Each structure stands twice: as structure tokens, then as C-alpha cells.
Image 1: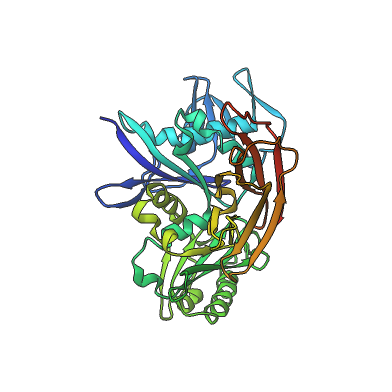
Image 2 (image 1 turned 60 degrees about the vertical axis):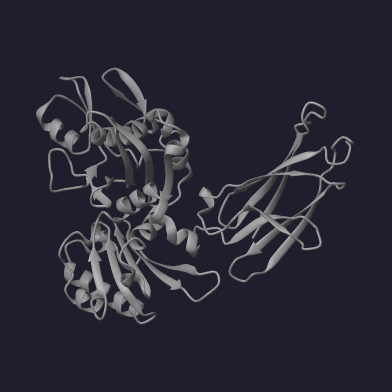
Length: 417
């Protein structure tokens, strides 16, 4: 019988982390390097050994490069849009091909530890939406030989929410602070929970401190970095009552916080971890009870759609039928609705704002369809997004069986929320 795994993957520019759901502990568990059990950070480098004619990734690549003859490939993230090719052992590779190979090898390096292993669900978390990376990873299911539904893509922010809301509830009785100090600099997220509102809501406030705090700015001056971070933490801490603080990112990996620790720990619990996003992605992979906060709360972030989009049946009750429901990332928000036209060539599209409860309506006339008997025209309505506030409703003529074949006409109604 195969070992079945729910896997969370944190894919950053320099390192990758993996976690899997431990059924016994009932929580995600980080995957360490094979050759170094003390670290979970797997370098994003490849090495092709001419001695063994084998590709290595991560920590194994770092070790093999010093023991075997071959070719090292790094800078893969930075060169994704580079059209140049790299020749390895007489074969040309694009950086995009090397990127896909690297991701697959990271996953395989974990699966190979078991005689029989299958992926039940894999959620990959990246820093933020990147169209090229999402397009490449959107084909990963083909490379891995699994169904398309097996692999999902998400962001660090979404993974952070999954991690935080699967911690003990006393940690998020009030607002929660998340500081992400990556190689690019510091970002701050305050997560406010409104339990007495209908619907219940979670609002994420984002502050970009990358110009004020970055690793390149301070160099070895950790004293000044500590002073500056303490000021930011004190300033942000006065804006809301915070139950807990979570710190993640390579910037927090060294023990430089002294003054700032005193500020952060005043009346609240503080957690430091480099594996928040990979474990959050793993919670999302398991779903079920671990995504209950998404069912109970409406989530408002910089990347989530804040409206429901649907149609009205134009009946006495003015019934609203949703195509999509808001509260999810725009790039992971999909919806489809089939309707049969009843003595009309018009559709009224409704945009309902969750926060303000305001509605916007647009009536679309479907031109150019052949005349058919009443209730023999079926239309497909789909919603696609280009950003959290912009997208289009795609209307397709589906015909009505063999009697009234489709005209293949497609109508596109763009919107801005």
C-alpha cells in the first residue's frame, strides 16, 4: 500500500522548504535535508555529475559539487525571463526548463525516501503572484504525472493565514501581527478579526517597510537594525491590541533582536519560524477542518476579490444567483454558471460588495443569436480576473442539444469593481 502525502512547498528565490502532514501528530512536519538533518532550507541550485550522469538538487547538489565532476547551475529564479540557454553535458536547457526540473527534483527528493509514495495534494506557496511562475507551475501536474487538481498555487500571505488560524484560538482572540523579513526587506501584516460582524470577517492590513529595513542596508550593523525594528514594532503595536506576533524570513534567522524583543513581548506571545509558509501551505493541502476559517469568515486582503458576482433572475424576489463568491485570491477565483433564456435576450449581471453591501448592476443584451423557441437557448457564464478589481464575464452560446446547435459565439463583458 502506497504512502499518501499532503505536501506544502514554500518556493522562494534562494531556498525551497517542504513539509508533509503527519497523521500521528495531526500537524505539518518540516522536511530536512537528507545530508543535514539540522536544516530545512534547501538551496535552489542544480548540479549535473558527469561521473554518475545524475542531476542533484538542494543540499545534495551543494555536497556533490565538491566531490564529483560536473556542472553547477544557480541563479535560476533570477534568469527565468532570460532567453539564453545553458549547455550541460552536450544538451541545451532554457532557464524555464531548469526551473521546472528543479521544482520536480525538490519534490522527488522527499518522495524517494519512501518505497511507495503518492501525492494526495501539493500546495506551492510563492512570495506573490508572478504570471510567469504561475504559468510554469500550472503545468507541473503534467511533469509530476498527477491530475491537475492535485496541485494548487498560493501566496505567502494566504499560507500565513492558514498557519496562524490553525494555531490555538487564544493566540488570535485579538489582532495578530506577522513580520516577514526576507532578502528584499521587511513587510508587516496586521490581521484583524471581526467576530461580531455579519458576515464575520478577517481583514489584513499591509505595510511595506522594505525601504526602511533591508539586509543590504545594515550589513553587519545588527545594533542599528535592532533599534530600527524596535521603533517599527512599537509604532505598529500601538495601532491595535495584538494577541500574538509571528516572525519569519531570513532576516530573523540570526540572534540580533534585543531591544525589539522587549517591545514585541509586552503583553503578547512571540513566535519565530522559517517554516510558517510551508506549514501553512500544508494545512491548505489537507483542507477539511483546516480551512474552516475560510468558510466561517470573509477574508479581505490585498489579493482577494471583495465582491460576489452573479446574475438576478428578475423574478418577484429578485433572486441573486452567484457565479463566483468573493473572499479568495483573484487568481484562484473561478466560477461557471449555465442559464436557459426564458423569453429574453438580456442578462443582468450583479456585483455585490461584501464590505459595503452596495450593488452594481449591468444589463447585457445578447446580440446575433439565431431565433429559437423559448427556453431553447443555453448560455454559459464564466468569470475571469486580471487583478482583484478587474476582470470580465465571458458569455458563450451553448445551443440546446442536437436540435439547436451552438453558434460558438462568445461575448466578453469587462468590469472594474
